[in-house]
Image (cartoon, rainbow, N blue to C red; front, side, top):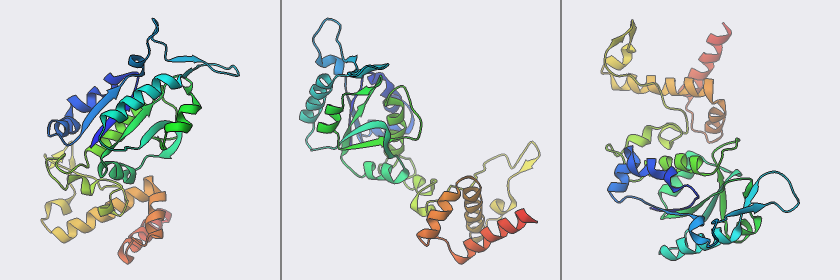
Length: 253
């Protein structure tokens, strides 16, 4: 997977190439990052990449020409016709399924805006899609893209030391889109709190049942919308529904 990024701050992405799972995946040539700084495509003494907004108002707007030249250079460097994706607060909400789609693709060209925004003519001409990390505004697209790339890279085959580790992550199909259950490790007793007895039993069927119930409990408490989605997709069993009904009954009593 090849990732190209148009950004004024290429150093934002050092964390992906130098640390942890994403760094190891890069070392294994599972993915690569290529940053294109629009400032390198302007030639005035001040290396100007923004200007005042027509119509007035606060903030500066990124110029279309430097972004265009940077994008064309990125496209010429690639051997495919990758999508151009803009980081934007109004974009499509990034989810685990979007991360999976990116991991299964050859990559993309991402555009990270700054200041008040980007000249709309660049967006209209070149951008294929817009992605958002959530309903909040950041100083630029870089922090959001770092999180998105981390989510996708760890899904690449060979990225994790245990190949099926991500299969049990929250939101994954193996959990029917629910949140993951709690996890415990040594010591058995910590500050008077013991590891749940069922996890020490060695009874695999009971452990699976406990984990499913804890997944349902946490999802119902923290993300009931995911329970609703699982119901709509008919992913919950009669046993699941009985457990959820029991939760409400115990709460009411």
